[in-house]
Length: 189
Image 1 (tube, rainbow, N blue to C red):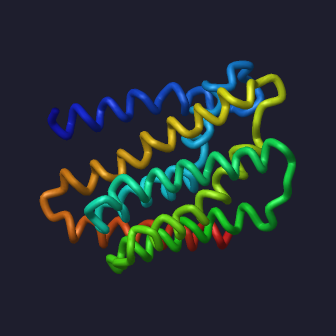
Image 2 (cartoon, rainbow, N blue to C red):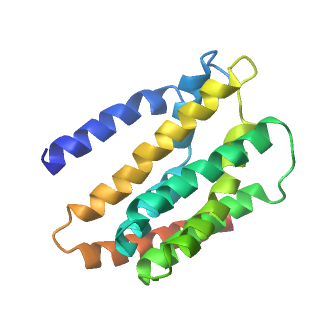
């Protein structure tokens, strides 16, 4: 499959989520959950960044790091659904975008277990935000499955975007700097 076809497929898959990203309008939990990660630039950037970083780490980290994010995000989602408080969620989300951007920009190499712990911590904030926005009439299980599926797509997008770049290292650093700046803008306001 060529890169253009792959990118077009990802965009086409995201469009229904963007078009229906108004929380509270869905009675189908899976659709509401799937659309939620696409409704905020902060979520998109962080989840794509996880794919970027996992690719730069290489080896088993390409799969273990995104899997750690998705798994812990589901836990954070459950915390949010059940009303368990997590302080400074929005600030935490903005910080995750900046942190992941720095890790990509500086090609920070750590063990897979350390990377999984870092992204897991980031995922807790994102999952909590998703969980607290469960629409009133949506099924919680479907909602969580939906936002987990969308997250996998965003991680794969990050893995694919850098993999197909002709100058992968320059692309990764540029993406990292852009993510860091986006995180700083999100923090500012």
